[in-house]
Amino acid sequence: MSSSAACGRLMHQTRRLMLLCAGPSRSRSLNAAAAAAAAAAAVNLRPSFSLAQGHARIQSYSSSAQSKTNAGNAKSSAGSAAVGQAPPRSSGKQLVFLHRLAEKQAMTSITNDSSSITFQDLIKPRELRRALFSSYEADTDWFVQQLAPMVRSRGASVQLFVSSSPTGRGNTALSPNINMTPLTIGKTSGRLHGRLMLLFHGSDTLRVAVTSASLVPSDWGVLENVTYYQDFPIEAKRPTVTERGLAFQSTLMNYVTQLVAHQPKDDDVDDRHPARAARILKELKTVNFDTVEARLISSYPEHSNLETNGCRQGLMALEQALQAEYSTLPAQVLNSPIIYQSSSIGQVSDPWVTQFATACNAGAPARISGESRGSPFAIDPADALKLQFIFPTTATVSQALQGFPEGHPHRLHFFPRYFSSTFPRGSLFDYQSKHGNVLPNSKVLLRVPDEQSTIGYAVIGSHSLGIGSWGNGAVSSDSKLGAKATSKPRMMRNFELSVLIPGTESDQVPLLKRVAVPFCLPARPYSASEHPFLWLLSHKELLDE
Image (tube, rainbow, N blue to C red; front, side):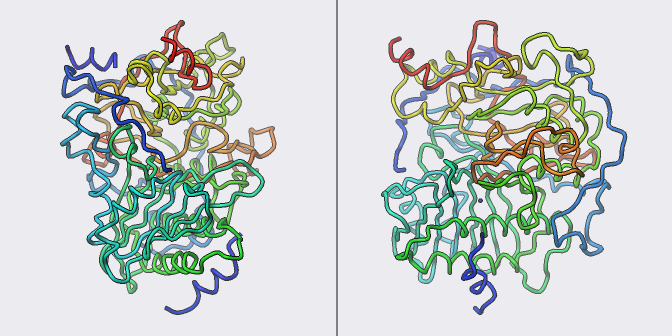
């Protein structure tokens, strides 16, 4: 079988924390057999592709958009990259990795592949002296086991923030070195959905990792996930000076601060976890982030896109990050489709999609074609933007699960608003893994002209497609989003964290070599008879098959 044929099938800071900073110094494992691979499939499944061919044009944006850097970062030194200028050339190193799947889950191409990593590869526990994790869920037994070499080290400490406690208790000591804290998120049903790892290796290195994966074994061997990481030197005498580095540092510290602000307010809360987080915040000030090749994008529960402690959120953060990198996106990128692969699709409608696409254009107005809605529209398709929302069909999920074993489907979510007349059904494309019949937990926003292009950008992390993760466009009068918005600001429900990785013409390595994606391109659009996998509606149907 040819490779192309195989692809076709297939976050209110507490006063106590401030004083500490200023002072001295699920338990659910998924069924590993659920997504067995097709053993006879080819090793290299991704065909070459061109995203420019057949894609619609959009009117170029001629005004010079000036980005506003995060509060406190506007005055950076001469080492800063000036806003509006071309961003610095990348190092060419790979920044985003796939997760190495168990051999029975996929082709051998990802079980021993330099573009993939294991959890142990990432955390390097024998070198770890301090760490902070945030995760949607955690298999605590597995997590403690993974950290075993570090736990034996004297003075080592780990703080884990989770969305809810697998034990049903509040602040919990998983071991003398490891503390777990479930977050309390006000009156909303929001969750800690952002996945962050701050890994202090030895005395001189911080590894920052942002991932789509939770701290459960299935996300590190069964399901498709993506992880960005970079190592940074700890140099108290050489602080960060570049605009991008300062913005990264500011957003990172604000995210940790928001985590601590949402800790339980119980009387019996252990004093160790805020102290640990405070030490980490203090140490983050000594890290030099000048070599960072990404920008952080965050969302916090019960916040709109308006600034929080100087950091903009959601769609505004995405727009601002792109403006800081490009001011105006290159024409080749503007002419490329917006590809968004997400294992969860929430509340989405044509008006919101227009706001989302405007953010993806760095503020250039977006016009959505009738094809995105799946019905006639009063805009010439030649002047409209192409959208590709990648999510598996019911048939794809059924085939991957081989009879629908319990345990996997809850990782795929699709809001029933799909049946609304304003849902952009025409933008749905099937998920086809490069590695056989493997289901995704990844979230990837991609804008790139073709496979060999160095220009474009990718966003990976925890942000799912929908208002709950990104908010809407009614934000502020100086935003291209806010100028066109008519609705009230929509509060985001979850903690989210993703990274934007830009590519430029001066780069020496194609963007897709620096950012590994798990799905085949070009993606295949849904046929008229196909539907997205809807858990509540499809569960019984698939069990009956």
